[in-house]
Length: 181
Image (cartoon, rainbow, N blue to C red; front, side):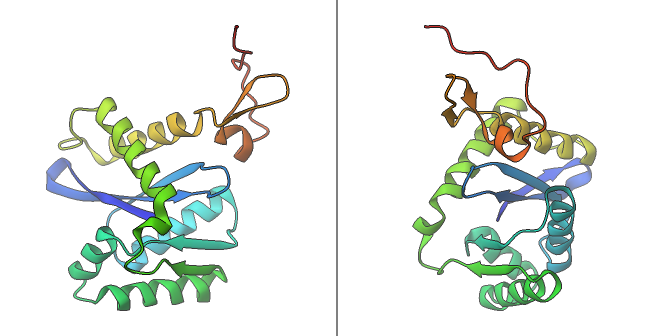
């Protein structure tokens, strides 16, 4: 789980994307947040759990987004991290851990995915500035659809397998075709 930088949308309001990523399938699930306070992050987690099911564990970084969130709330990064960790463990019984502060390489897989999300966002719209809230949420879902349909492997028939195929096995796609030689 990581926080995607704030985006200024219509009426000069900021929105954040909270990104959940499965470390096994590399499937992503973005959630739109109106704030980086604990309550907003917990509500986003609740939406995720209701759609995707309960998690066993969550790993997160202590990156710049978390530091900015702590600063906005006049808290230290360590205090905000501890508060979030306790809230998730108490309310949901999910093992929640932050990577060490000086170890950005521990979150390399989701940092790579953040870069991919930014590339897709940049190709989808020139700027998120000025778009309304519903359009921003729709844009995040479009990004999710694009990135979760990228091939990560091939099955025994030579058909591409994507994160979407793994996390939504009942939603098989008819347009999957064997690549031509």
